[in-house]
Image (tube, rainbow, N blue to C red; front, side, top):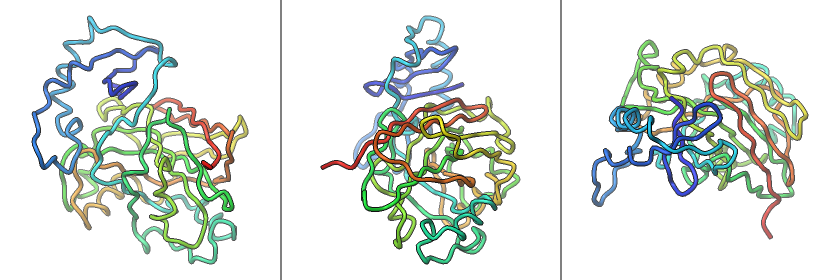
Length: 287
């Protein structure tokens, strides 16, 4: 099932180039009082929501997929986890290009670990990217995104995929410079996720997904997740050995070689096997 959030926080299901409105399925979510939980309530109750969706779909109204505004399929992730230099060829290009490494030592992921991005950087694909720091290079990074579906700590890789609710396309945007990754990649709108969440029963094996990115039609990145240094199960194992993963936590799994700059007016397209395609507008820095 492809589940999305669209327009004014409507809940939808994507089928055959249409979005079916199943917002009434949100009625099964528990009523909450302060303090709100530090996880995404929809993802935590996804099984119950999906049962209600199935009952609603036969009579649901629909609109064309290109007529809606896509929000991030996860509204309230407790954290955004990201895997740096997780493709060998990207590691090599980062070490070779001074505009990427900025005199920082580019180490293997097994040595430097993962990093966190601010949840305030999260947007849906329709929001686009608002560039900052125009005096610096701002790069695109296409990635497969995994969304955690249930709480876990010290999760073995062999069981890791059972903790995944589903997958999305991600753009891990970055401003190049000397600061830590978590700062340069946490700018507002620099974590793009969407257009929907493909549930893990529909996409059960993320280990060999083709994906590619173009900018204004120019090919930039093309890869397959089989080339990940740490596969998705190993990333989940690694992350959960340091902190508890909660429903709705978002994991950016790493980008391949071919990262490059974008400027205002550009359009980024990403196509990902088993998930779909996104089109993301890039805007110049605000005055």
